[in-house]
Length: 619
Image 1 (cartoon, rainbow, N blue to C red):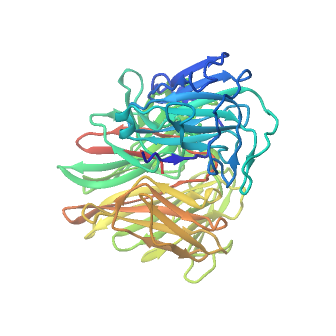
Image 2: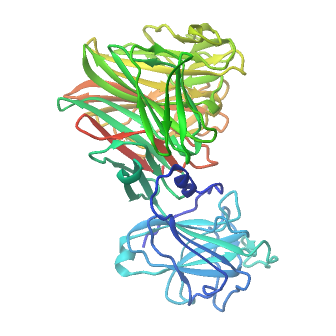
Image 3: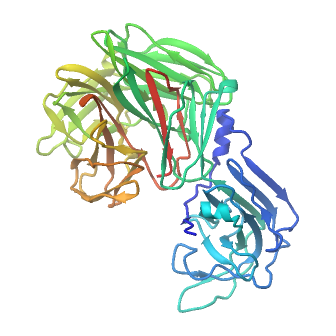
């Protein structure tokens, strides 16, 4: 039958359907829910039927009168827990049955139950001929259980019914022992049972024009979808599974039927939505046309203010789910503050840039605003490169309310930025006015990494971005910009939805930096689940790697838990055999604690000029 079994770490905080309610983006009913005090599913012969729904099935019940029955057994042998122990027969078992109507991955869990559980999935016809399909005892950090089963097309064709046994934990044992003495019937008696379908839900727009799409995505796979004729926002990609989700928006810009540029925007984690965001700079001139995009993702009206260089440029009332596009002519200034004026009413915002060369549009890019509550004094970039057609320039703004001394450090280590080949520059930024921001002069003929931009005072708050212009044969082709990565959020694993280096349309490279000043590490790159050759990086070392692959998802992992890394994906788009654009973006960090389960984008456009695709899945 080849059913794939997975045990997943679970975040026991707010469920994603609460986010959906908050964002006012309806997917319809969250799932089928039952709450009762009887014990009709106390026996194998009278199980509760799990109803296959779009998102989830929920059953809440009191198991106080429940028991076990003759012939009932626990899952055989070790493997249900996180060690080599086997389970003894539990207490107060509840039974469910599920007959899949479609081939899909389904997760069963007891999250929210007030006692220690184990869960087992069986197939068979009577309690005496059951064959174990999968099981789980504890979900790593809690005493509830979660197991995922891949139901195949064969299961669907045969009409196979599966039985789910949920029991209160009693004891466990390890070989050479063959049994254990049951402990006390501990904990409460309130069972919360869920069947979560591995659906990823996409919602674009609000109200009567809202577009909805649902895709069942197996674990470890990525889907890329394009939705024609849409030009609206916001876009939400979410799952009710407490499993790591990843999402990005890939945009190809076209004129005269030809691809001109490619950029990719990683989704903004919905759990991090807040009321204030910053950008280092805003420019609209003959070459660059910028536009701010703002969306109210709260559940109350608010007014959004935009400040550029200390001057209020606009004030916009927004109802829940409403968006605003705002542009300002003749502005070349910073920093930019976008602020919701109603406490607790969150927004998201981005800046979209149309780049022109001699009056003709050559590229499109978009960058998310940086949340004010995540501002810090130190940021990283994987590299700084000027040469071979690429020109990089750093933009720095002091937003902390006090003067700041800021160091730009290329390929240097330690607080004094030392090391062979290191480049160091110092900038004194005032608290307000034109001296509070700077466009760092370009370092010519430079290819160095990592890049650190930091204030000498850890109490300062700065914001940093790197803009990159790309030329081919001396002609400007594309413009992109990426935010600096906060040093206090560096971690050991990053993820991307996809990697495409087919050589015909895309040339892609991963830029990987060991951000630790003292420890070396081995870095593993997984593309489509396949490990590539390990990469050894000494402290402070960076490297560029590429693979002849078109696959995903992508995971980049530092095996030394003390050596944090930073990873970006660099993409060159080709048209007619020639490079026409360059873009770079950092991966989504994976902290292994609380999964990102919902992502927001301010806008989605798919027309003859702008082709947007959403990539999403479980890495």
